Length: 546
Image 1 (cartoon, helix red, strand yellow):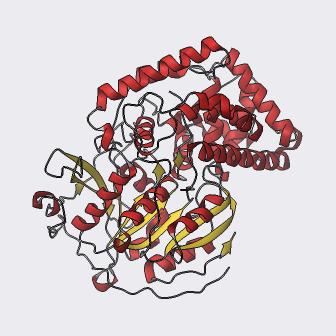
Image 2 (cartoon, helix red, strand yellow; image 1 turned 135 degrees about the vertical axis):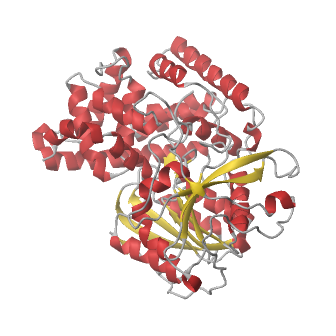
């Protein structure tokens, strides 16, 4: 099965950076509007910090055993391989520990008295006391398929200011990590498919083999998680979040969603408009685009980011830039490199080779954040010299493969959630129908993302809709942040989310810059977000930063 590019947040670039720490010695050699502000009313309940969360009141349609459960917060253990692996998160700089708990939710909200699953949670409690405590701020960092239990501690210091008003809380959505995580293939089998299926199909025989491997993958997912797959929709995750809000003791959901997390936030606002508290959606997904339109938008977005990288590379390295003078010349050089890898993958100093598709993912991994462009420069310098080591390391980080060769379940969860949500990606004929448009949009990314158009072919679960429903009449203002150079969620998505949410709901901020997600990159954006979340001051619609 192909790898449709996920809407992962900036944590993807951070993970890339962490994975490359062991290669710093190697890399260092090449380092050279309208509207106004208003104060939102304060009707949120404060909540004390306790070792266990007080039992909640009854919740409509859910048994008391679920609605009145008590969360037991314990010191967090190390993330599992499915979540991303690594060490236990320990403490923040002020000594606040990371705590973990499990929320019980119905597997099927249509049968709430039936089977249940556990949702893995993590939190760092607020530094505020008394009336200054505003409850919990719940995060989703993107994907779909990203583990919040793994990601929040990595970014904890970035959100430290927001602990002045909130407990910082995140979770593994259903199907992800330790929340009934979908695991279709073991790590050895994933490696086998990555190597065998490492080149894009160019002949009819190759396309047939590609389809056979995709069918093997679908069959493995159905065998491993067939009973769970029908219930892994974004709408059900939104229902889990509202039950989470209730059990945490908050009258409204305060929320910070990034990338795919913005789609989840929009779906939540549609289902529970009166429960929306202060909500920030950063790197906004276009809710009006079907899968073909969304994928084509990503092709254009990554091509734009690549061209910006190449221009910066020329400015920094001059004639030593591996993509020449950039622009069409640079894109042609990269397309030729990928075509050569399809014929002869590169050695990497280990048992695995750098294939065409792994090289493409290594390139993609660095375009989420300008801070990691230098890694791409080094990786390409190596690749043009016949060494695929750095690009493979970048690809492994993107795919959630740790140093022990274990994969997180993000890819499997992404497939399961995407196919449960979308009625698209099921017609192999869409590949040929859209080939010209994708290849014209980018000779580098177009041929690759084209194959995602049939990513749900044969999936055992029908998708819920062509596009998510996010209309949120009656919801309070929701802050939307779009970045002009965002490769994964192009800026237009924020404008369209504002339109789809409905009049008076979306407040649009623009970051004129690079990268996937703006918070943490620009003081103007940070100030607007923090003032809004901590004091309720809604920024001016149309504010431009950067």
